[in-house]
Length: 322
Image 1 (tube, one colour):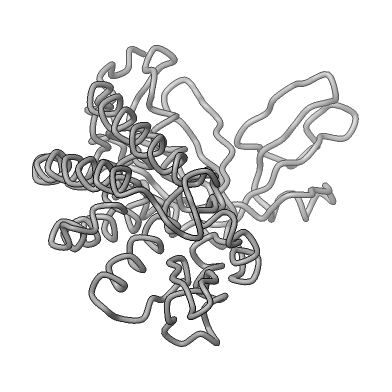
Image 2: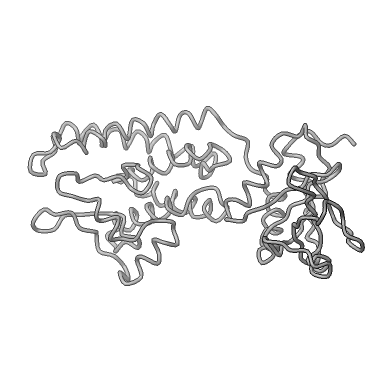
């Protein structure tokens, strides 16, 4: 049967159905379907005949299985192999939530198997994808953000060079160049946010989303822009369009720029002896819990990167974000 061809239309017609019961993948003994067993699907491989069937049937027939139980979701939209991008779209939606899936493509529909305890969550995510299909990728915007981020890093890498410091001194000319660049980037980012919201993974890809975060992270002279971006980034993280690590860094940056304690310990200052120390932290006894939830290493590991010889260490992704 001929399926749809427009991925956006396919997503708007996804119509996921969560089936009752639990399911497993198992190997048919002797390469044949046992009597009394009615599998959902079979796949013959060199290693044997794989059966996809209900857990109840597998247990009744004494069939062993390693993975499972699984939930079974059918996408009622009709699609074909010519519909490039559909599988990538729904698998990415589940991946961003940390849900693994096994996809079985039949003639009319795709069938998705996920861990049973996350079946309803996966179904809700797929239903949300139907309501809000991802934006089309904007290669031009992604390239523009990447170029801005590269220039940002060029300056900060020069600051990280020990020759740029003399007992903590930085040439005013270099600081002025950085200030001009940060403001110019902020002035360009503002209309981008107004037009697109947060430039997330679907719009500009993983690298583009990282570039947007890096740019706004350094817009310290435009606190109103950082606040606006923080609200948009918070929503983007909830939608799986940006990383919790990015949100943690920007949250701390705004806290510091507002004169408040930070929450994740990402921002540094100097003590009376010129040593790098964290800006005051709200509830420091819980900071590692918050950092782990954001996918970041414990504070002690992060602080071990900071030395008086290199005041701008890389964060966990190798980006100079100070």
